[in-house]
Length: 45
Image 1 (cartoon, helix red, strand yellow):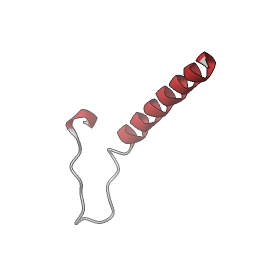
Image 2 (cartoon, one colour):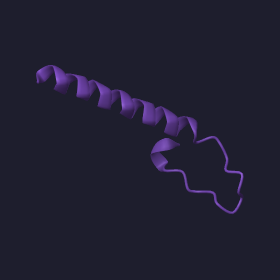
Image 3 (cartoon, helix red, strand yellow):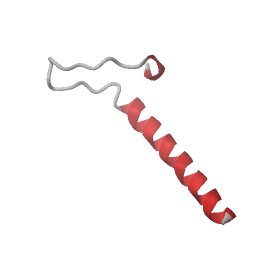
């Protein structure tokens, strides 16, 4: 059971890092629709 828990913690940590990298990399890209430009959170600037 401990092995499964350690594996799940590593998987969740890796997914969190991947999500942060995707969020940071997509900050610079612009939306093709000029009417919809969402605000960028302060933590990603």
